[in-house]
Length: 462
Image 1 (tube, helix red, strand yellow):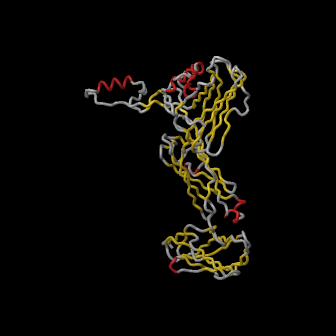
Image 2 (cartoon, one colour):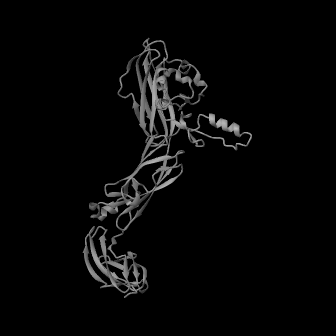
Image 3 (cartoon, one colour):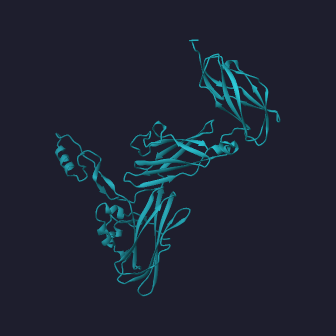
């Protein structure tokens, strides 16, 4: 590899076509090297050095290599100078504003004009975007070159990708002042340093075989910062909160954010109005993120029916799914980012899990009510259980029924439902607690408190 690693600072058809001069570029492309605004390669050389003749760039080569990054232009900024008309400079500023070509029509003080400007630097490449480049090999000599082969590779920190030239046949002849061109596209999927390696080989008219390579180095930046939080519900549902922050220097339009769940779960999006799957999001109609702004997305994951039948399998699940994010820049360039498998810490239920399947929201004072509790054996052996109900006079809820009764044997990964009765003694919001299960084999007692909550009210009309 050469000691100088130049950086791409070049522009191509997508940029110039918007200005209406790309047909001229195709005809006189070999002259474009002298126009520093349109084409340039920066490294140890400055823009003034690039104004030399092509033979000085490659004194021993008959062919020269030119690379242009295909990018889109930007709206020309407009900076009006506002002054009171009675000031001495007021008339001068008014004339300057009227003659400024960047002034938008009909909106005299708007910050962006109607014209498009070519980028003055290489710009930023973000993860998930498509890197496009226009590559040309031009015959600068006065003789015909033969068997021209152009190969383009992209070297990342972990792999080397062949972008062009792997299956193409050599070009038989390339006359003087002619060129062979190629356009490459690659979706950037890795962060860090990328090196575009362009290799050219050809045979001169005297039968001499020549070859050379050029290296173009650029950095791929991170566009979004994604943070996740998980909330485990007693009903085996998992709530996912995804915080997405725009860390690019420009606002982006959030086109699509979805969750691709794992095979054990079904996902429901909670970001639409009224909880319906409609295009109206809770974020409003203008769905964009300013730089450094953060937005929260909420999803509910419910276990599939076949997964709930085997609690042991559901207990060990840590993979939730992947987030798929699609955005667009202010000029319409699309980017896509898919996260790796999101993982959560599986809740630990112990040997026995107790959930409340049915409970009323409100109950009347001094009136009995029923609840349904489900007892699941989460260990790897059969358990012989005894039910004990402990009352606390200050809790406001009193168990009604037989305490210390035998529930029988419960095989592993199986469950049983119990109908239990309580009576409310104190008004207010109270927690159901005091359920004890004893394993008769190991003489071990499992305490289950704070199973659910009910509101006790006093009906004064009775």
